[in-house]
Length: 220
Image (cartoon, rainbow, N blue to C red; front, top):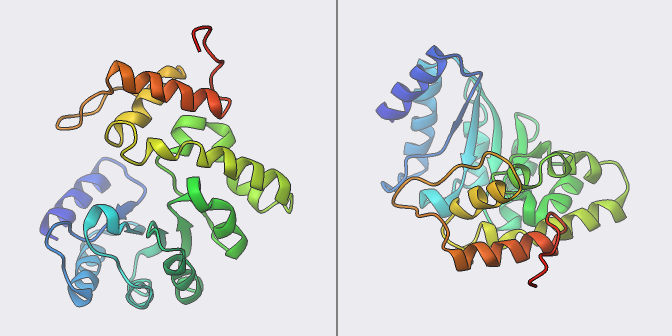
């Protein structure tokens, strides 16, 4: 928590407009400790806070009942729900939507249904950097009433799922490589994450071709 406060203060000092905070990783804090973590940051740093529930990365999931309490903390304005359990998203939406904005963090695999349920938007780490404007516009498509167009785009996004899973390299190496292949400034991962091998890059090219982001090469 002390480190989160210190980094948040530095972020504010250099001009950050807000904070996206997870619970502390590895320690596996209980619900009371998670609440106090967000309360402490809010009390010391006057910036809007987006609470990020990502159990796959942090090691714990914040239950919707606990998020509902955290949502009442001053400066907490939104939740990014990345639990893979759709029922967790629905519960968070039901209990918290009157207090804060609710964003889905897994739009690549379930953006359309979460938008139908009432999500306020998506916060994506895969589809937006790889697909650009088409993915950025996805939420508007989902809420336009054109269900056929939304379904079509959702299936296209599902074609990128291997970039987030361990199918090709280790995330985010696959996303960075995809961006590089598409002419975007993806850069390269920091160790211990390694760049994709030539074989993995070839697999990635096939995925990008299959979803229509790259023209098929003559050799395939």
